[in-house]
Amino acid sequence: MDGVLIDSEPLWRKAMIAKFNAVGLPFDDDRCMQTTGLRIDEVTQHWYNLFPWPNVTPHQLAMDVIDEMIRLINIEGEAMPGVYETLKMLHSANCKIGLASSSSMVLIKAVIEKLEIKEYFDAIHSAEFEKYGKPHPDVYIHTANLLNTPLRNCIAIEDSLNGLISAKAALMKVIAIPEAHNHHHAKFIIADKIIHSMQELTMEIINEL
Image (tube, rainbow, N blue to C red; front, side, top):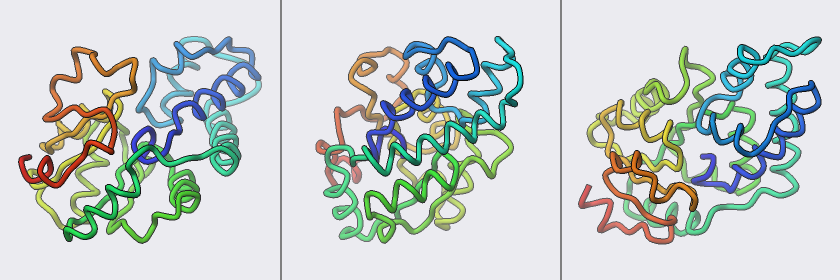
């Protein structure tokens, strides 16, 4: 979802920088990028383990970031280029469509309501209900089960390296849409296809994979 359906990475950075700095931990874009693709509770716990701060628990900080994210999504949230066209194309081709996100369900609901795209999804699942988030494959495995589709028949669309690893570990084919500054990152070579945006996605690519 994040960085694929909605241009949320700038919003995540705004929310995390504001809330981490509020508890006394200097936070910037570089630190945000170090944990891209992880669940927010894993992010706050990661930084607490490295630089413990007083008075606010990692869980409470995660909730504060989520609240700020919902506020920003409602004000600034926009679909990524090609999202509506891709959803309509896949729906017309009778493809099952699932949403497997590291974000919490409350954030998923905020996004699909903001973009008005709920009708397109046959299954929606959050890694908050799994023991481990991405890059562990459980969120993808569970989503495929909800779709009643074999893992090897699934194609995941991912923008983050953690998400890419998660989907590949689930035995899925992966189309990567890295952020511009990561597009030529060598590690994305494990993707089955790399494109610049969903505007490049066609049924020919889907059928080839």
